[in-house]
Length: 413
Image (cartoon, rainbow, N blue to C red; front, side, top):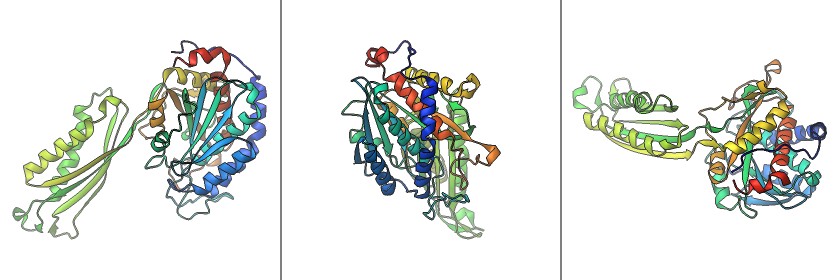
């Protein structure tokens, strides 16, 4: 294991910053090009083609068509050494954009409303910088452009297709532009950063009838209401108060008329938790409660439960490396935010289950310019000055990770 993170520099910090800032106009142009042509999960054909074109122009070795639309670029340094992966997601959301900007989405009903266009542009800018400064790092950097983070998930199929092999990845890092933090801040946290993301759907079958004759029925609405209330006891009375968890019912549908007792009802929801020990616990507990209430009322049920993404768990050593770089880049301890975790989910978690790594938040909101709408909002946008900051953090992480003084320790992760 890495016990220390030795300080070194191949270029001065000011030289790195100046070189990265020189790329800023190009990175902004790339981001806006991607923003204008958003694509949904596993449909990122235009984005993939755009990236392949730019990587070819830069002379960077890359593979396309991984997990349908994914790309992996490989950049080798001056000598052999450890392998660091950088991951960026590139899919958009089914949202109609309401921003009035020159680079507004040209695809009706589809929008980059979560910052993935920025993630992709930052990763491409990092690739551009590294390809021009191969003498400044040792080892190999693999940049993973991943489809379908918003669902059903592109990380797992990319892993299954060998994206972490040939050469084998020693560690991985990634970032998420984060409008919950202001520009000039970085959210870095060891351990759980984002929650597991589970979903379920339940159908309740009773016996319908006249609203004035309830004794002839099994009221699916009453049964469903009791289930909704009872499910809240899982977190309130079954989960340790020191652990965080959420059970949310987002949909409940039943009935067609005011004087008719519905014979069936349907509900769906989500479960979130940080602690991996809860893997498998919630589906069992949900079914126990639903089964008991249905039996008490003479109803039956069907429950479908699926686990989408596990929790995002950051490795301590790689997080220390990212934190040390963040402190250098933001130049003030107050700019590095340690308690920044969220119940949102992310399939970066699959990469972190395979190799040690760190996923972090890069503050991107600027209320002074109206760039502070939340993620998944039709007016979401961010301060584009953060793009160069993201590249600088990635570049400095590469230099710190892929250095001769650290190579022997890296192999022991």
